[in-house]
Amino acid sequence: MRLSILAVLLVVFMTACKKETNEVETKISQKDNFWVVLNSEKAQKTEGEWTWEFQLDRPGDYNIQIFRKGKQDTALGEVSVESAGMTLKENPETIFVIGETGKEETISQFAKTIKLNEAGLQTLTLRSETPIDKVRITPQYSKNLGFGTDKYYDAWLKMHNAPEKQQALEWFKQAKFGMFIHWGLYSQAGGIWKGKRMEEAPAIGPKVSEWLMYKFEIPRNEYAELAKTFNPDKTFAQNIAKLAKDSGMKYVVITSKHHDGFALFDSKVSEFDMVDATPYKADVVKELYDACLAEGLAFGVYYSHGNDWYDGADGNFKNVKKVNDSLGILSHPNGKNLWDPSPNTHAEYIAQKALPQVRELLEALPELRLIWFDGDGYITEDQAFEFYKTVYNSNPKVLVNRRVGFDFGDYLDAGDNKIPSASEKMTKYFETCGTTNNSWAYKSYDDDWKSTKELLYYLVDIASKGGNFLLNIGPDGEGHVPEQSAQGLLEIGDWLKTNGEAIYGTTRWTTTREGNEDALLGGTEHRAKKGFSQTFSAHDFWFTAKENKVYAIAFVNPETTVVIKSLKLENGKVASVRLLGDSSEIPWKQSVDGLELDLTHAKVGTNGYVLEIIMKNKK
Image (tube, rainbow, N blue to C red; front, side):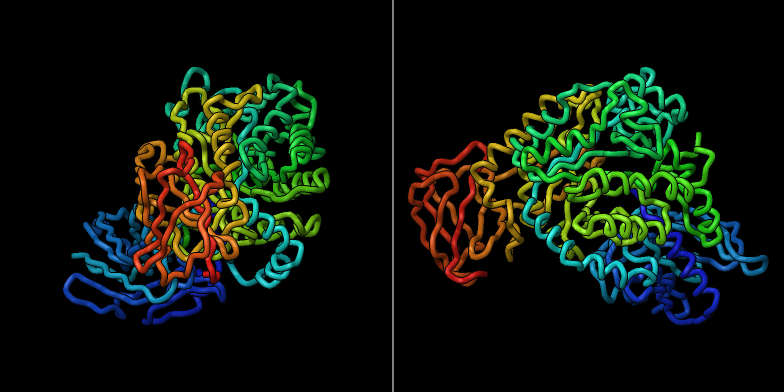
């Protein structure tokens, strides 16, 4: 789940070698601003303080690097940086000395990053008792800021804007709620290997159980032995499709191949798959595809194209590191097989396994709706575009997510268990994927199940911000969904039977919420450590919209009357009010202060209620 900035760094490095200037240097392609170099000579300077203004084209998380001339033997000392309302105060470590003899530069980098949320003119202030030469601002390696160059932009845009793609995007925007399934050989282990839990594994990396092979650095041949015992329940596909249908989901996405390299489908280019390597001897992806279509559900596949610990060599890590070292950029091996890499090259893996398997999926599943790529980390821009083009040429109706790499996706994902803020400006339609506990794949000892209200909150909050929610289940090795996970999904389904009008096919209204603070979901590890502390009151509302209708969603039942301040007269006149699931008349009146409603006799559910407000004029 990582972005390669190799191509970007090469372009910028070549540019920098050709040009010397004392002015603020901004490294950009026509579409994106990737590096910014701020020279000390052009700063507004007082004793021990430098301030610059610079132009930023694309928001994102950025590393802050400090350059000193020469090969420095002394530490930089404590330095503080302020930008975009954030302050970093650290003793940045020296990470690289670059440049030829006599022209060396010493680079120190802050451990934390600066989040620049807005494009446009920015200000950065640095304080240090040690003289500096310049500051370099580079994108965090794992964040996709956009196209590496303009090489493929026009070709991509033409495909992305094709009628087939846009129709598919319209379907996606209507669907709103889908099921993610992380399931594979690792599901049998349940997060435990040779008596040790994921948290006790030697390698640094995610503690989610689908990373079993990586965390325990299991040799490829030893890991492959798991396939000999992978023989799940034959009713897996029908059970999962029915659960998704009953939970109110509109589409299903399964891990056809995760980072471990094992395919759940019948592949002609690899025997490390469900048909050739397991006693199950059947294409479980095709079985689930058929079961979902029978239930009226759309179908998608997850495919790890950049990472493959079985056949993907070192994930292109050594090649990237060699170039990055020369540029003074850290290379992160997270997600790369450095303990037992396959003997082929990563480029050979892409050409001989990954691209052919994607073609196999597209051919075998003609009604496929989307491919959810992952592990783009160190693939090249050429390779990322080739994946997008391969999908389009086979079936232009198939959507591609952001993680295909270099912004070649048709839509964005906000991140694993991450919800964007209401103020964040999304460049494309977005989806958030989330878990029902704290692992994606089955983890036998993870009992931190999210309550129905917590999951509903995520669904509603995401919908109010105009996105989709892809909610994950992790079946065990037999293909059975943990009872607590299934129960939460079914209760969401019950809520949607009454209130689904406020979710499906809706868009963001002028106001996303009222009363409650925007408590963001900050990632899988964030939720695991912090838990869920959000509280709700009868005065908290989330809003969605559809044509001339506004939906006000509450999680706490009122005692008598409520006032929705966001629906005051200046925001549009109300024509009628209806409580979803209740045909009785709701007394209401609108004023300059808001919409007041008497809900004393309203029939509301245990997880709150939804009001449908029809406006006289579309707002």
